[in-house]
Amino acid sequence: MATERFDHTSVLRFLEWFTGVEEPNISPWRRRTFGDLTSALRFDQPAAAAATFPGVDAELARADLTDLLPRPVVPASPQILPVQAPGTKPQVP
Image 1 (spheres, one colour):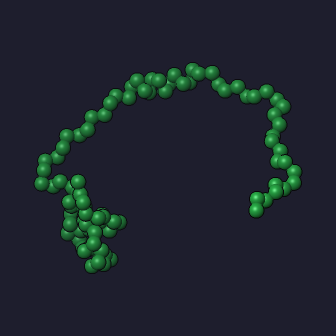
Image 2: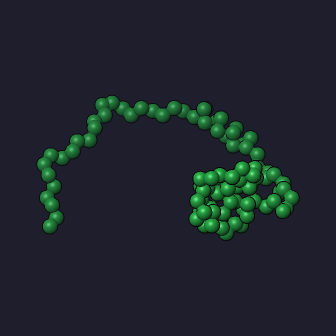
Image 3: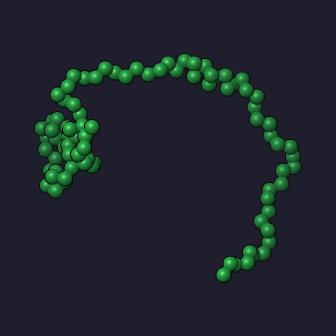
């Protein structure tokens, strides 16, 4: 876990480290205050195995079954919109 602070210039600083091309628009204060993301990436360790994700076939099949559900019924006519009460409400002092 990286405990440094990072900001939007951290990506630029990482690219500086990775490519060797210096970004001139980063102030010395930002360079002192924020990290360059290299501590968040483990370059000294072998790459971890890719994560395995659970199968989604059952969920997709269940989602496809929603096409077989009955369509919503439109409420009976006539529908009446609500009306705001006339006048003003008394204020609380």
